[in-house]
Amino acid sequence: MRTHQIDWNARTYVMGVLNLTPDSFSGDGLRREHAPAPLEIAHNFIGAGVDILDIGGESTRPGASSVSETEELERVLPAVRELRAHFPEILISIDTFKAGVAEAALDSGADIVNDVWGLRADPAMAPLVAERSVPVILMHNRLTPNSAEVRERLGGRYIGVHYMNLIEDVKTELMISVGIAHDAGVRDSQIILDPGIGFGKTVDQSLELLNRTDEICKLGYPVLIGPSRKSFIGYTLDLPPEDRIEGTAAAITVGILRGASIVRVHDVKEMVRVARMTDAILSSGRPG
Image 1 (cartoon, rainbow, N blue to C red):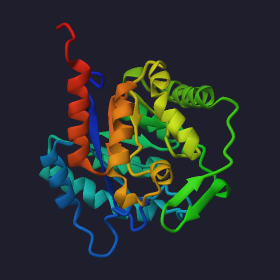
Image 2 (cartoon, one colour; image 1 turned 90 degrees about the vertical axis):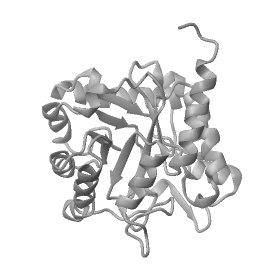
Image 3 (tube, helix red, strand yellow; image 1 turned 180 degrees about the horizontal axis):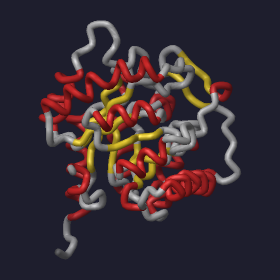
Image 4 (cartoon, rainbow, N blue to C red; image 1 turned 180 degrees about the vertical axis):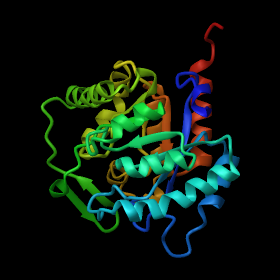
């Protein structure tokens, strides 16, 4: 199996985002009018050096409408099948918290489950991951609609989100997800953690969480970060999503310096270069 050949700690792996939605916060939803086909985007990503294609059919931006399982399946399954047929060696991740969607995507060729609710939204998800023995990304998430503020130019951000101790609370809640996984029979070797930058965190909390990614890494699992184009960058630099590439590059670099193994990005060509350069700097002068 493709994922059995991956050492998540060997280098930084780049996950490219394929949003099969009309309302992605980043402006790249592939179901919007005149959007390029997923196959075209995937081809460009692979040519740029992407390691994983992350396919999602439901927006998680603040204020987004929920999507039924049927509609989500209609969005993602054709893309999973097409990409698997054309790119048999590439890793494919399915971005969903619904076990039914994850199961169908795995049957269609996906390799990894990316659950933004850390196995807490659907009780059938953890047993599915255990049965299929696939990697699972467990993300920390405190999304609540009433804590979101949306501005037309900058998009949504979270305000008034309270943590007793940001890092300790995130670590504790991530380990609750790990416990759910263990109880279902998921092995430690399958687990990847995502601190959920921007998900139920204010701008300042997202900045702090990114800067302290190393403390999440100390939990002993590979860590994925997903700061790409997010509102904490936009509100810090006063820039809309399409102008956040430099901010994303800075965030990705800091995340790698703090120990992240996987970076989830929209601008694949540029962020592959950032990751490779950062890895080269970090490995220079080291013995062996």
